[in-house]
Image (cartoon, rainbow, N blue to C red; front, top):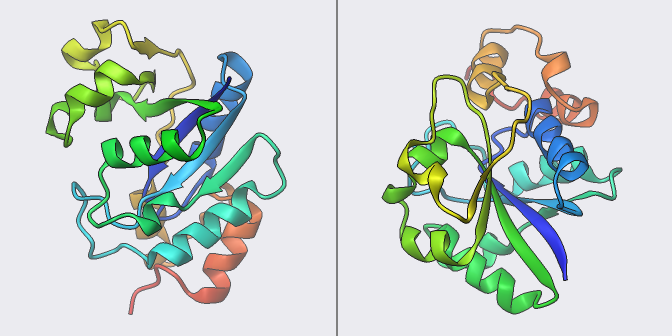
Length: 193
């Protein structure tokens, strides 16, 4: 059974920090590949600045299409909204019984996992590989047997910073995969209206 890391996110937009973390996990853990699971509607995030799900999925595809270790995953687009990680995990496990799925998440998400629907089910049935986030300690959850802290590089690049910079007319060229940067520029995404 091959181990697949599931990197959930809005990816609004996907940026170089996401790709660096995914690469680190493939190269430095037992994961064989990472799937970027695009969430069309995260119940814990505000929707004001959220691009359409298909636009965000398209940018993820652009970012990962040339790397065999990565793939985009649109499974949540066919599930009832809002998207709940527990439901997605069950559906993926049914659809791909030959894969062992592992969640990849930042320490900030681990700290608040008890706000997630069916979080006990997730903690009991799936391994979680956690990357550090500035100012976070993972809380009591990091001592659980299914939780593995991975000493990956600290990434302070955020999609919010990128969106705000674009809205202010600033360059974010080195924060994005070149194909994603070109798409955002051509489509006029995140510019002030």
